[in-house]
Amino acid sequence: MTLAGATLLATCGCAHHPPTAQVTSASRAVRRAESLEAESYSPMDLRLAREELARAERAVEARDYDRARRLAEQASVDAELAAARVRSERARARVAHLRRRIGR
Amino acid sequence: MTPVGQCFGTAGVIAVSFVALGCARPSTAALERARAAYEDASQDEQVIENAPLALQDARQTLERAERAPNEKDTTSLAYVVERKVEIARANAEERVAEKLARRLSREQASARGGCRGRGPRAVPSGGEGSRRGRSCRPTAARGDASPVRP
Figure (cartoon, one colour):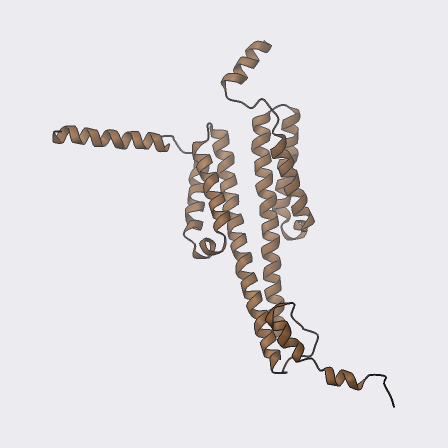
C-alpha cells in the first residue's frame, strides 16, 4: 500500500518536499503589505493573500505539497499587489495634496 | 523537391514548430484570460514606459503557465499572471503620479521664487526648489521679533 503510494507519487511528478521557501516568501509578502497599511488601502487583496497563505500552510500539514506551492505563490502575488496598490494610492494622494496647495 | 513534396515539407515544419512551441497543447480559459490581460498591458504605453520590469515578470510567468505540466498548475499560474499584470499597472500609475508630484513641487517652488507664495510653511523637500524657496523666506521680518534690544 505504502509502496504503491510512493510509486504513484514518483510517477505523477508530484512534489516530495514541502515548499518551505515559497511559504516563507508568501508570509513575508503578507507582512510587508500589512506594514504598509494595506488593510485600509487594499483590504480585499490582503484578505485574499492571508486566506491563501493559511490554506497553503494547511496543505503543507496535509502533505499536499503541490497544492501548497500553488497557494503560496498566489498568496505572494496577492500580497504584492496589495502593497503595489498602497504605493500607487499614496503617490496619487500626494499629487492631490500638492494640487490643493497650489490651488489648481 | 517536387511542389507536392515541398508542400508536405512545409506542413511538417509548421506542425513540428507548433508542437515545439507548445501551441498544440489545449489551453484553458484561465490561460486565455491571462494571455489577453498580458497582451493588453504590453501594448499600453504607460505600462511599457513606467513598469517594464513588472511587465517582464508577468511575461515570464505567462511562459511558465504555458509550459505547466498539468491543468492545476496552468490555472494557478494563469491567475498569478493576471495579478502580476495588475501589479505592473499599479507600479506604472505610481510612477506617473510620482513624476507629476515632482513637477508640481518644482512649480510650487518656482512660484514662490518670486515671493508670491503663501508664507514659509510650504517649503519643499530637497532639490533645486528648496534653495529657491529658502531665498524667499521672510528672514528680515523674523529678525524684527528678536529679543535683542539696545
